[in-house]
Amino acid sequence: MLMKKKKIIFMSLAVILVLAFFINGLMEQQRAELIEQVSSSTVNETKILGEATLVDADGAQPEVSVTVGSVSSGYFADARINRQKARDEAVELLQSVVSDSAADDESKREAAEELGVIAAIIAKESNMESLIKAKGFSDAVVVVGESDVTVVVQSDGLSGADVSKIKEIVMSEASVGAENIVIIEVK
Image: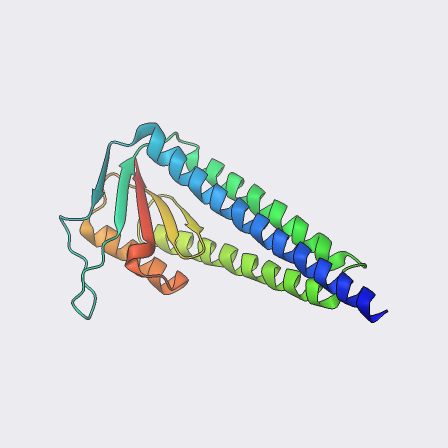
């Protein structure tokens, strides 16, 4: 009886681990597709900010990667839909574990925690998109990765001040360093 419980717990944890890797893979794949869609199709130039120097309080100069390109008019809506589809698949898998009567309590707890992490990421992305738009940009899509954030923003030319605004929003909402922020400007 005890051995059977241990096997069930072990198998449930293994399933949760596989699901976590799968979900992480889906999210990273979606982020990579977002970057590839913008950067491969119509990139005009790639630059690391040199015209405007971003300075932290300690005097260090972290660099934010900025890429410039252009996309179709429906890009932002399509990107949001694709992001939501990937998230929906991940949530569905996790919810199946939570509602599975054969799963042990530990597996259900871990799946529920992962659902909470996904919900927090969705909220952060939405908050950052709203704040970026509030700063005067016509549209933006934000994708939060494991340790980095990618921002695709519609603009006719990002100034150093614009990059600083975006960087400040991302750093405050996602708690990442400037070196882990990628800004893709689309026209």
